[in-house]
Length: 417
Image: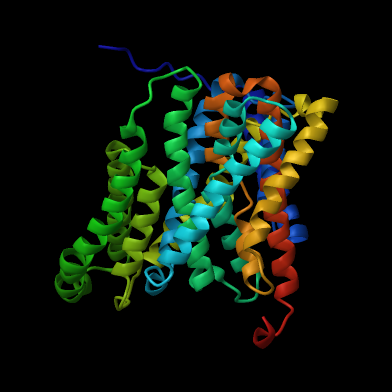
């Protein structure tokens, strides 16, 4: 039997590091949110300063733990996105969502091959791998942008509109494609073995979960919940016990679907999004006293908004190799490639609300960093840094552009939007 951990108080320096990190994440997020409606930019910059790219203030032994906590924040961000989605708009918007997602996958790969292979004379494999790294929209960034601007946009909440539904569904689709790319990139760069199961499995599992869970909800979970629990059990519980029950059920649904998605071979974030949609469905019609939305706001939202969400974007900053990006050859090629990657979304844009669709889908993040890291041996160091430029510029530009647009848009009368 292993002896218990010998309790040793942390050093003052470690306490100061952790405390200041939490403080500056919130301050930087608040400052950038007030100026640009893009608090995540401040949090990414804080991560770069505290992490390996610049200051190296955080001990190396902490990094994996912080990344794990940040990813937990990402799961909650995506769950909240599902919880606030208007489910009546999902099916009518499905075809458009698939079209937008397909465009977001095909164009980056095609344009990357065109510029990097034909223009810069890199190999075809390097061009494809770079495009594969940039074909997935950052779910965390997309949800955070919409959530931040919904809270500050004078009632302008795109998450509950058809446009927001299309945006979120397309981002989910891109994330699944990103998962496929993460599976096949090591094999085509010579670091693994390719099988068609890598391509087919995530897609089939995603489609199956998107069909089976709603069917089970319609015919089993929703009737049981509203015909048995709500009228017979819920009135007998105190309000505090009702909150605890809803919180426990929320945790069971979320952890169950995320676990099922992971072991079945598709995106964990898809499981989180479906879990949010399922909880949203169970809240309609609203129970007489407590809803899942109120439970999430009471138990999870305070921790998410003050720490976990900030930490997720901070860990993205950990992964940006800031100093090598400024090598002159990497700099001009990276900026040119970034411009190409941001402008690819402009093909989707029109005046009015659809501007948001193109801008919000520009952002890259967690999946792009994962695929780029896996493709690094095949990309080579120079192309890898060019891809890092594109990921950084796309994420910053997407967040800032949508934030500025919301600030202007909130002043426009609703009839003119």
